[in-house]
Image 1: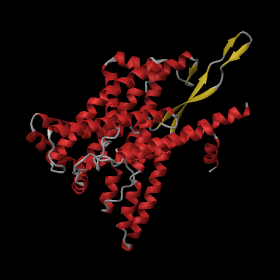
Image 2: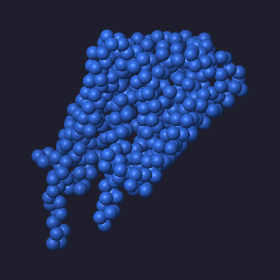
Image 3: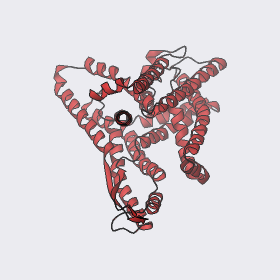
Length: 423
């Protein structure tokens, strides 16, 4: 409460918070504007029967299930960013530009990601509309109405991408993450009301167990998300003139969940990719596209197959993303140049090997944690038999991670202002 009051006492910070809330309100406003000719009943039935699109609907803040002009959410931009991350592995020059050129490299990386977002949004919009037409969820559209809807959906995705970049400039968290956070939180009232409507006194113990498990899972997510493995670092003494530098001890923090929620987003993108290809094939052969869509829908609606693939992909991508973003050799080199070393370990290759082994061990725990959290809703629904009971899941992980990151950003800005007050 005290920190909340401090936020609104600082004019600059208060303005930032209010502007973030304003842009999130704009996002929710546009997410409620549907494209013309929608049958809401058929749409709800379609999303209830399709697990993957139901999950994607959470990320769009319900915009997908309403076929709003922002129905794709930030999905195309995230996909474009993933493609760029993969390209940094294939092309060393791109990796060098991204990691070594600093702000200029990051700006170039973001510019290319924005350009890739445009065709991706158009393809995804067309593919999804074609899928809904083939399933008779929406009426068959003519050429010009279809092109008009695709252009509206593409413009909505680009507008949302722009909002995300504006939000990032306020330094209260990543803009894209804040948009996903707002989309997930916006579904909470409907989830809570659904749980109360389905309530009967005979299932009271089940509800109590659900609440207790939810609190345990939230505490576990916070604990693991903040967990670190600290490697001790010592710095050699250096004599320069009459002064002695160094000789202090510190540590190298290695987060247990080094990759954040990126592996889960990667995994969902891969699971959606077959259906995306099937939808795109409708340009060539609508009959083959319809058959493939039906096959993949039936395949992924199998809880065992879907859960196993999802868990495996999350674990694999956790290692993959950690490998491309965390370079033990580069860290070892930086430590050696600054006169730092791990006590008892020779600088150079030996230090890099120790860091790599430690990262691999912590990543194993982080990968298993992410995988279990991702499929936890499926597990709880299987044992309880109640569809509204979704303990854990990607949504919870994102909400907790974004909330913690925003809290840290606000605390750091409050600390800066306290020091400014002293000086």
